Length: 404
Image (cartoon, rainbow, N blue to C red; front, side, top):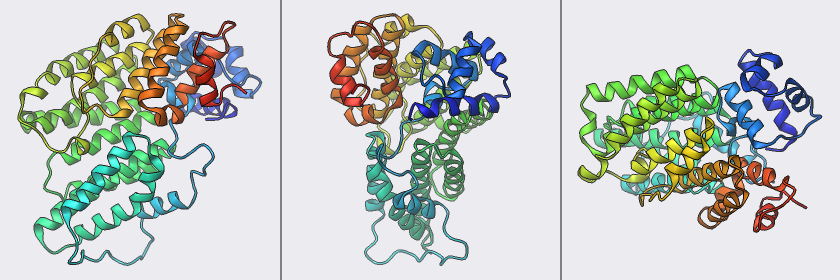
């Protein structure tokens, strides 16, 4: 996000929360004059502690205030031809032709593999590649769902649900949450006609995440808890995949509770999730990790680090992260969040050298995510404003375009 957009975003989020500038200042314990200067464009940015406080006062994640990692290169147009094609795939033209069943050369296994590869690209921040592939993936899945053969049709609806879920995630990364919800609602409709009982709960989790991005915390909490409870009632926690889906929903609910100020409830949910996550390795091998919710002892610890940083406990975050060993199926997007949150914690404790060291690690393990991530830019900009630059900061600042 360009600095010029910070004030506009702050004003929009404040009005969505039905807060006056004075009320937000009181909630965030930030000077009302700082809020006025930001909203009027007289002040282009603020230090990270101030941004953290404003985000907490608004009940949103910091990246909602800064702008989510974009799904296009900074020089690209997020409504260019590729995304128009994605829109058309999500919402086919009125009175357009009905999808034709797949031809003789169609292979369901190949379609599933292509969708799984799309998820891998998404978690690796290869958004251009995902957008290029999505229209054809969705079209092929719709064709399979039009088949007259029962098993092919059920599998086709399952593939369509996963492809539309992926499109919803990409739309969120582009800041188009209303389009994301349309895609996710259509994904749930398709999933309901598949033979996979875990697919609807997985997509509900994505919907809860999108509600969080819109500041609809009560809605996000409600659907995540309801769906997690339904999974328990249906006895879905006795398989690896079922446990992962339940765990992801529970962590999502905990995040919504924390952002709503109910930290005790959030801690209880995270404790339950951490206890259940220990069972993942003890259960028989599940399905394709690329197609199932992310849930493991590592992911629970990463989320606990995130909440500790966001709610003003950087020392706790650093203690949680110390010596953490990530499971091999932890995607690059989650590794990125962990390293960014550790860098934030170092910054909050005044350890600029520790923050730089962590960001250098991020550049090594996930350079594409680092370039896309607005939070990485915010941290480096904050460090660059210090009178004494720690060793190694300049290459990072040049890499992210923070310094001339």
